[in-house]
Amino acid sequence: MSTTDARAAVPSRAVGAHDAPHDDPHAPVGARVCDGPAQARVRAAHARLREVDRPEVWTLLLPEADVLAAAAAVDARVAAGEHLPLAGTTLAVKDNVDVAGLPTTAACPSYATSPHGRPGPASATAPAVQALVDAGAVLLGKTNLDQFATGLVGTRSPFGAVRHATLPDRVSGGSSSGSAVAVALGVADVGIGTDTAGSGRVPAAFHGLVGIKTTVGLVPTDGVVPACASYDVVTTFTRDLGTGVLATRLMAGGGVSPACQVPDTAPDDPADVADPRARRRTWPADVRVALRDDPVVAVPRTADLAPLSPGWRGAFAAAVDRVVATGAAVREVDVSGMLDAARLLYDGAIVAERYAAVGAFLATDPPDADPTVAGIVLAGGGVRAADYVRDRLALDAARVDAERVLRGCDLLLLPTTTEHPTLAQVAAEPVEVNRRLGTYTNFVNLLDLAAVAVPAGEADGGPFGVTVLARAHEDQLALDLAARLTVGEAAAPLLVPGTVELLVVGAHLRGQPLHGQLTDLGARFGREVTTSDAYRLVALVTTPRKPGLVRVGPGRGASIAGEVWRLSPGALGRFLAALPAPMTLGAVELADGSWVTGFGCTAEAASGGVDVTATGGWRAALAAGV
Image (cartoon, rainbow, N blue to C red; front, side, top):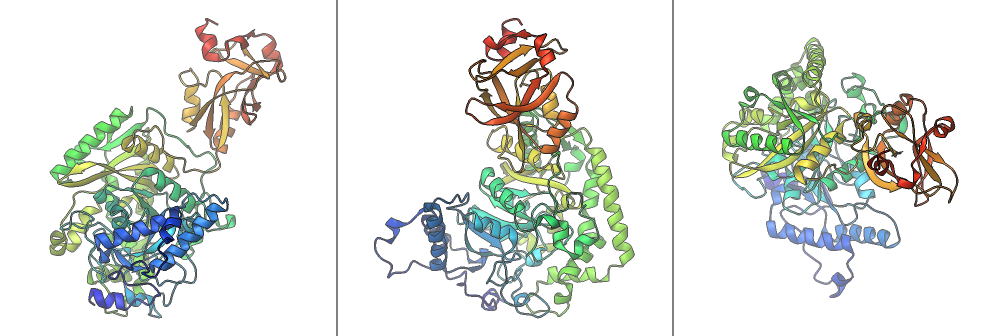
């Protein structure tokens, strides 16, 4: 099927991507003067669409008038006082993710009409997307992909091969090709992708974007055409880390009732394949919410980097140097076992999940099926149940081995992929090139790791990227290192919700002897504060030296300097359980009138201590020789 035929076969109320809509010539002359931020952003996005003229990026575009109307509604909500964190943001959604009223083709138009596929427009928007729209993002349209999210190249689509945003002879990367290019071209601010084998990371590396792939199950996959249902993740592409974290946090918070959220369901539970909601996982109660200042970051041995092109090998070495410059310690580890596990995704029995997802449809021999994709998926139909169980058990063993390899390390840094091939190279060797591109990505979801792909300079005349990998649910640690590498900040915006505040005023302050107890729990620095004037500070007779904070009443004490840290509730519970006498935790009033949980001490201990209130804080007291 030709590209033109593919677009004609898509039933929708949207305009074709070859015919990007223009402004209404009959619109009032002063209309743009009254535009709010969201409307102005939409106009700029459509101007950019016309400028770049990249029809292969999209499977469909919504009419500009409809998008402007949605943007006007966002502006009106903001004007009415509603807080919409994504107001003024444009959104592109990969066309294997449902949007209500639009077809979901998965880059196979007949899939949206065949009774063996998903005929007709979607009845509901995928919860991950709906969360962004509810927060003020304005949808522009749906984007092209490697058909049925099977590929890392971006060329396996009847809508046309998606070229790189700025290097037209090279591939865009896939399978989330269109979403990545839409963001890289400046049309969309957030691109929604999916990632089973690297589809949210490889295109990010090729375009100098941030690609966030959470722990499997944190973001709902309801409304997504499965690739491998046990390992699919909805992801984001953004030009900056902050926008990506915000969008990801919103997506992870929406869509499934608490009754369906299972904190400790592993992604290889057989029930997961049958019901996407059963795969929802929540943050553990004691999850770490910050990366320590001096983390240990694992990197591959030289032998494990052999698949890299020479230029990419040099760029990765430079990236490792930048990790060291952030204050991290680097430890070489043997990742060959992880690389071996990666092969199970396509070369083993796990491919049966792809057949379970769309095999019955492809078995009807639709004329618009990509032959490479069809061959991969249909091969899964012959997998024996015993072989599937064997490979799932092999993955269990590989996860245990990966944990052994990473023991004592906080994170793992890898090159995102091996090289940046040309369209001609992929056309000559479509399977082999794709296989190489997945060398450092295919195992990640299989081994239940979180990943953040970030730009890390250039190599071979184009962008180069690395990926920071973390254990399941330690996504925040990966984001924090990504922030240090990309923008030089100590920490990324907070992804994990539901944290609690803890005030420290003594030996747990930064630079003090017990501060490590906080960082070991993954505590996150919040801000420097002072208490209200209702407190005394007493130097206690303890080892190591520490003070006690005692409430004596408004105006009867002094403001005491301290720090507020954030922890997960379970981490705070562990901290309290280990708290030695005579220390206590309780409510402490700050100078601004707010209350936080903070350190105190027993009255008996305070009565035997030395009053150091006049110094205004523990550091000042120590400096005074207490």
